[in-house]
Length: 117
Length: 113
Image (cartoon, rainbow over all chains, first blue to last red; front, side):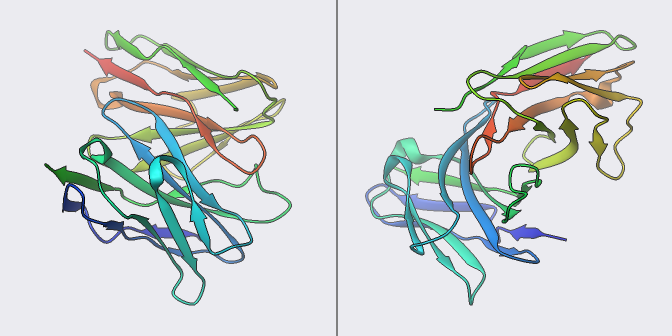
């Protein structure tokens, strides 16, 4: 079984400061890892993904994440937070491989990020 | 980029009636689509995997007779909530997978009164 842990329900950061949203995962094989952002009553917007290659992944809106295999982590980061970054963030994992696309995506419980002006 | 269109975005229905939610992949074919349910301030829980031309695969604890899934074409999957009750009120989101990604619909807020 695969799982994702987001240990922080809430993260508060002052505008302009760097932010980190933590994520660890468990999967029986190579992981495909994703970060999504959700605004109230909206679907999920894709931020970035790790499939293979460089461990540092750059995504939308200045976000990046680093895949750390030994620590089974995929923390989301941004050098300078904006008030508009305030939203609900989900980390997710799927089992990588040739059957990708038919593999289900497992989500963490979400982290609410609040950027304080 | 790949787009998944979900309709309606919001629906209010009376208890005991049925509601159909549509999920369409607009610019790609999706042999597999996923249906999720999200309770307030909670994560997305996978309900079922919809397979084109065959029966859906339901997650443990999800009533397949209550949540009917039909995936009749490569671009359309539907979720029908039958005999809806207030406890079925929730946010439902569908997803499909273009190459190396999961794209989500904008979600449907179902309120059963």
